Image 1 (cartoon, rainbow, N blue to C red):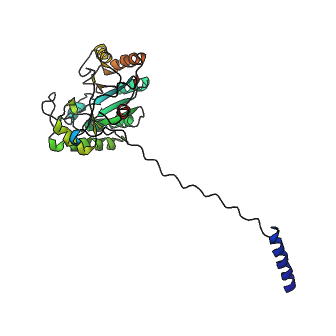
Image 2: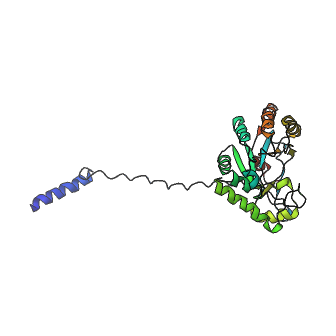
Image 3: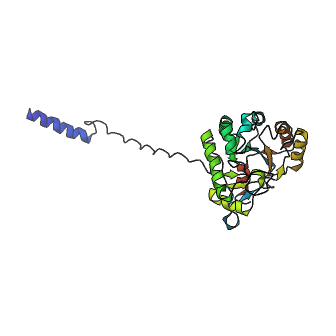
Length: 280
């Protein structure tokens, strides 16, 4: 028995030399690559702060980057208009949104927090549609200066809180990533308002083309005003409220094909700000 084992051992030693007595060597497995970390969504472009670190103000995109125009729509509703909505007044305009989708027009909707609370399903639908982006139009739609088209006024101490309240309302409605852009109610602002919003990290967005759709009933007149005013890089201000801007949807159906015939391409505000490269 012992001799036999020795013979086997000797044979195995010889076989090992000939790579025939042992099992084939295990091939090392290729190391698995480490799982990639999820890519964080890039932050939308903003402008560099203005003088003394004040909130920057954007009015239009570059005039030399081709024929690009941004249509923007203010979804207005003041904090005290709930009873009017309950009585049947319509501060939304679903047919306008449907028209933009049918025409495949990207757009930026400046929404008040109060509007998002009144119409959460619509706010969520707009906010989750890649054709659109939602930006901040304050929570209350109260003016940030005195004497602004008769709007109630928010105090200096409450300005930043009003903006942040709007973002909270968007999140509650299901808007996933509202943009860091802010439009002053009525477009009214001063140095103190810009200073108050500096900690919020937003870019204030104005416009260079006034559509004249507020309270207008003549859609052709609104369309003519927009078409006469648009230049490359323009930001057009319009409204997304049936009660205050009943002609907007009809005007858009004229404006869009005409601008396309002139060689214009529609863009969101974020694209124009990105093209500006941090410059106002």
